[in-house]
Length: 211
Ligand code: G6P
Ligand code: MG
Image 1 (cartoon, rainbow, N blue to C red):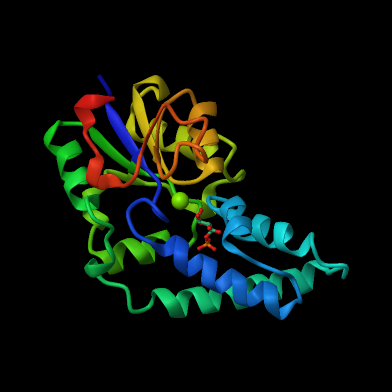
Image 2: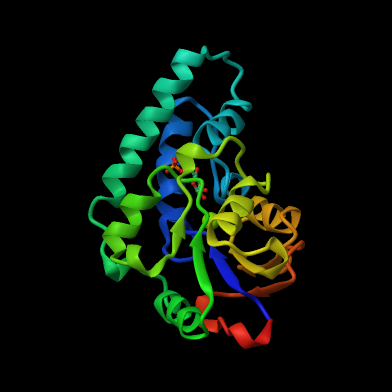
């Protein structure tokens, strides 16, 4: 039924969502802003500067653009330190099996992550060549929930959006998939990912024939 599957990276294929959480938490607390898992849920899938704006919105202080760029850099350096020791051991259970099952079914495979560190993470995981196309986040103007990144992946894969299955763990990501006119497979909890067409707990439950 589908011609392509477009995967998100952070929180779907590997648990970098946790590293983003740790790095943002340290940054937020250095600015006197309270930060917890519930707040972090809103940041999943949101690009770096967008996430920073959401965090600093709870600070009484006003930040100049220059200060914000410095804070974003600081967070990114911490994040890069955290991902520097990643390896194939950091693949989430079921991720490689899911990618291989899509390949065996003869579908195209794309990656739609707004992370500017996505290529580095894929290299560490050793799965770069499993994708036919990886969107370069630096070339995307609008982050999720805007559909741009999923539409770009579909067009580069040469597949109509309606023939694509998108896989996401973030509320903003599922919204982006739906706005792109694709079928949305959520990874997580149905109470959180309410817009998804189907929600599974992890890629261990991935079954292409079922959607
Ligand atoms: C992904 C993550 C977000 C992260 C964003 C930007 O979408 O889910 O938590 O903020 O990428 O990542 P970057 O590596 O460019 O800072
Ligand atoms: Mg994600």
